[in-house]
Length: 143
Image 1 (cartoon, one colour):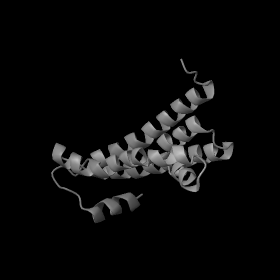
Image 2 (spheres, rainbow, N blue to C red):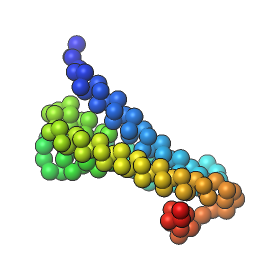
Image 3 (cartoon, rainbow, N blue to C red):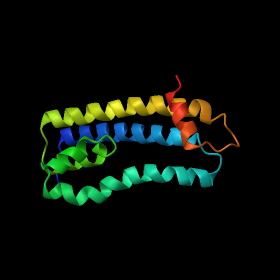
Image 4 (cartoon, rainbow, N blue to C red):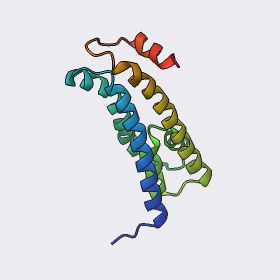
């Protein structure tokens, strides 16, 4: 059986929890805009693309785990739970890249919670009326 180091297990759970928190927040914010399942499927598609995109880029990382594109993709908060963990399994990146990836992911979660809470505050009360994109942007700007 292959052995898995305790460091990789720790980072697996760290990136899993942070990635789950980010996407759960985004889905909650988008879900507050929907009145029906059909609306929810339409709104969920851009978020699904954020989950599918790193899977499609998985062929780049094993070839060049320390390449510029792999490093850049692993620092993007939507991609880092998948790409950075893959890089760790292939070849452990420098500690500053891991720390920067986690910091950017936590900052993205904080921003997502603030935006989703603003959208949720108004969007959940707008039952029966489908919001437009300018309305959603206005909701995000209100304090």
